[in-house]
Length: 220
Image (cartoon, rainbow, N blue to C red):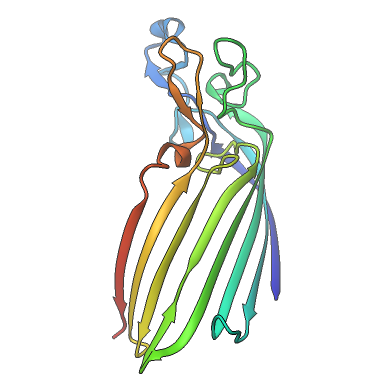
């Protein structure tokens, strides 16, 4: 088994924000969540920007022959992130103290100081299922275990992705992969008059949009 770890501090990261409109300064007081055209929109976003910590621990292991497969590879990665400070447009950051539902309750997608997620990939292999053909069955799963990340697309609690498929390596020259890819995540009702549905992050928002992929690769 091999194990690795990494820790980094990143500056000027786009942070999870409410929708922002860029308007002339005179109109900003009239439109909540808007910013003036004179605002420094550096780093390519009118939303919140800030500094964050990121850490990960990963491990891989190769299994030998069993009654179920000839060999298999297992990889797992535990990730952690924390927002250190907000440097731009904190008024639209979803981690601010007054980001609340109209009734004062906490929105399901409110950013937390810390986020922890886990991803696992497992690929059993069978050699020579037909002459010159090796078969694989790649499986993957990832999920936010705790908290909502401050970083855009950084992950949300109980939201994640999964995939399952089958692949064939033909004469070590052609590769065919057939895979189903799915998403999952939590929803909540906001307390607005329209009773809007609020997903916990972008992955939850597409949890009904699983898809199938078929790829073919070859070497020359």
